[in-house]
Length: 169
Image (cartoon, rainbow, N blue to C red; front, side, top):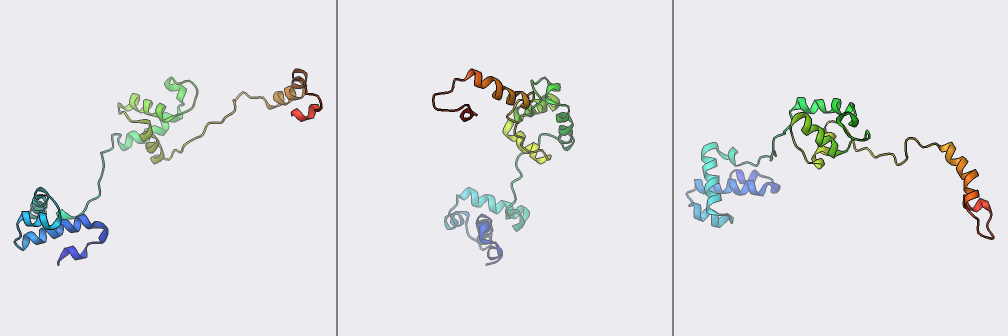
């Protein structure tokens, strides 16, 4: 029962590959191995060839690495400096950074195109978090608003009969 017994249950594909190799070592044909393990003859053939070249280690599960990063570590390190210059310095109206704007700046600066959704992951990796915009105008004058409510609004608004002016505030 060799190496197949030592594999954890979560790695059943790995265990199946190793079992296929063990059966091959016992003289089983690829056809019989594929039938016994419920795989194609091509899969059994690939497993056996991998094990012949690299031993049982070649059949072990490996972590999927994904696509290589398109920005170098040095380029990623430059992003905070670019963002600190402000969105307006890159020709945007207002000084708010969105993922789309950051993606545009990355493409302009480094020639690398990213989807805005992926830019949010990059920003998270370099320590930036999602910022929610303030919902009030920056030029808002609270004192002027209170004066308007107290002085102008009662003049403009006609109060319905039976209500006092205090009920509309």
